[in-house]
Image (cartoon, rainbow, N blue to C red; front, side, top):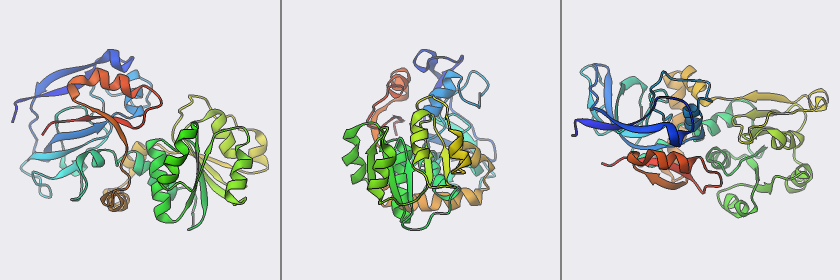
Length: 331
């Protein structure tokens, strides 16, 4: 095993492609309660780029290593670690920086992935599918056959919402910006897929037979969030978990006075930090079951070695991609 590793590091906030470097560090040594994990895959999420830019609510001490998400294989354990053996595929916690070839981490913070799920698949279950699971469980008590609506339905979280909702028997209205996504999202299980336009409310009514929609999921903000809110039944809830348009929600008073809409938000890292290990595993178990059946696979547009970190983050910062940009680490 090599005695040094490559690690992505930024020493100052700024444009990720400018401030991110790759440096060599010593191979990690586990303390008694830690395991050493050799990384296999780590995606580049919007939150990762925001953190490097200095626009994320949590700012680690600099210099810092980015990466909220990833999976790897246990290669070494400290002497007091009991329930973990070398060779196990694990999902890493979000607060240590996964863009590195290996890392020592508290064994109790690792989530063991069952057989039948590959490292790339496992590396992307914790943020988007977990967000989708919480969105569908924590805000509105949906029953089989109920409708929900979401914008940015072609995002990784949006696709996870489609697949999990279908699994649970809920129906989805999926709003996108590009017509070419309609057939693709229908094929993935979206019941209704519509392009985001001014007459969205009428189109939704026609497509759903005027069914009441009690849950809206907003990852865009701005005008898109308002059009979403206008499709909801009275006393419904809209949950915001992203801000792709970088525009605030502008909500007319009437939607509050006459429709009594509820506006909520979710930050999955915070949920995760506050959850007990039991609560985390109760959520991971159904996600693992779905993953074993080939669902919840996040589409990958391109994978890079860590040595090409600058090119990778530059690619990830571009819009209109067909999938995630990820780091894959050699055996």
